[in-house]
Image 1 (cartoon, rainbow, N blue to C red):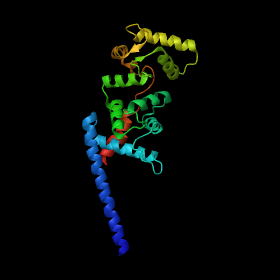
Image 2 (cartoon, rainbow, N blue to C red):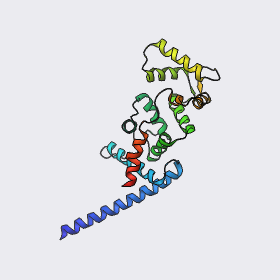
Image 3 (cartoon, helix red, strand yellow):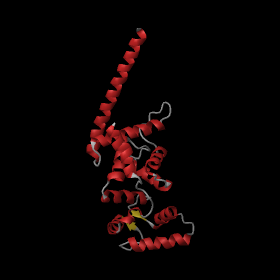
Image 4 (cartoon, one colour):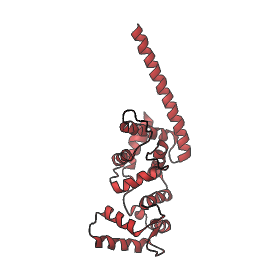
Length: 221
């Protein structure tokens, strides 16, 4: 009889905790969806649940970390979207990590995905330019172009890289100052949208697959 009472008490507590946790997630989802945009409340709930799954897989015993570290985010983007360029993924992590604390919070996670999955062309241009602006100086310099072209096109010969760089600058450097400003990049992309990811793949593949498996599936459950 005592054992039955204990089992009943534990079950009730579990249900209460589950119910409380669900309410917390719903409240958080509503706040974030209102702030971030592109995702409704139900979709934000799904993304919070996915974040919690990723966070649980990352945690070590006695860890109090409440965000995804660099490696965990890179692994997640690789697994979910087949984003494989390690050089580019390092930059993506920096952009997701808005407060520069070394971890991606749940709000930063949803905010980042909102641009990757649902962002307008203007939002995605700003995001991609941030990825390519390696030093954060507001311009893509020759040195930065050299590194990205070498990485993206797997080139080893310096002459080949320099030749490609000159072609890029001739096509995209509209004010002819030897570097690419956001205005140069924006003008080029709006004229030819394929140039959005000109210096490396920083937007996800298989977006529809992710939406079906994570957003739509969890909403149905």
